[in-house]
Length: 359
Ligand SMILES: Cc1cc2nc3c(=O)[nH]c(=O)nc-3n(C[C@H](O)[C@H](O)[C@H](O)COP(=O)(O)O)c2cc1C
Image 1 (cartoon, protein in one colour):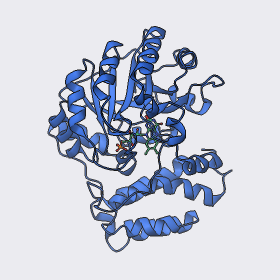
Image 2 (cartoon, helix red, strand yellow):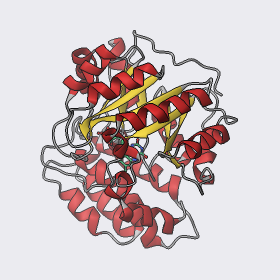
Image 3 (cartoon, protein in one colour):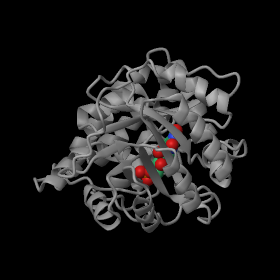
Image 4 (cartoon, helix red, strand yellow):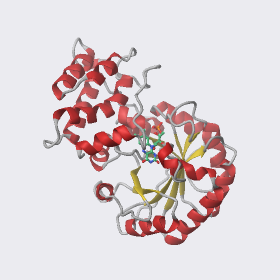
């Protein structure tokens, strides 16, 4: 178990990189360290079911980012003996704690009553959290949404969580049925902060350092968790720290972003994988990066059609370097109406791309 207690230092704003299946792999987390680490990392989820053993690829992340970076191992499951067995298997690793996924909105997941499916059943959550609490003396955290189809059970769920001395709750302020669309309800997160005694991290559409501070101020949360905007803008954690301290912010140019794309390619390149599959894999990340490149979304449109590395990089050079674009600012917020096609947890397409890429 990681020896560091969560250092919730009010003079800075603590941050976490949100768990993202097929994204927050060891290579990606290492890349994030290069651009400015969040205070906490979370792994992709380990599946816990009667036949499961902890996924080797995810295990590699647990001791791969270095002891100074607290990492929580996330588990998804509902079968109590499988979840507690998985916890015991993970505990020898240098982890900051175990996190339970109570938010995954993919139908094939929630239909099995795991992930976001658990939010329909506070009695089941009570049993599961009770068993998890008994299994570990270490840190134990929950990542959840504000409800399944609506928020009617939210407060009941929070009371259950509180009764099991959970040590950190990260809340994505949408229901499961909202998936990744619609407004994020930061007021519900503020209510949760009042009701819980443990630290609360706000999550969902926190797109910039400015927004992170706004959300913290309005909701009183102890920290901010960021997913997709960290893919778009890997400097975001450094920017949040600077803004919280009143220091000047590093504002990347399109040229800096072009270098980030090179770094993404270098991070994931694999000589054994065909060029077009590697290109498709990188496009998953550029989907988000493209939201800050041009207001019409032309870069995104063109980049999605690229079928080889050389084609892709030609497009990147045109939109990010040529004709003086290199020194232009990368947008602080995603351009309005420029949408990243979903790459989501439980998304079969992205899973297949990752698997066929063996990354
Ligand atoms: C590609 C992708 C994969 C995700 N995988 C997970 C996951 O394994 N576990 C989890 O708790 N949440 C997962 N999420 C949800 C994120 O952790 C986060 O709650 C959500 O994206 C909202 O935050 P954001 O607006 O900052 O991205 C995933 C999201 C995306 C986009």
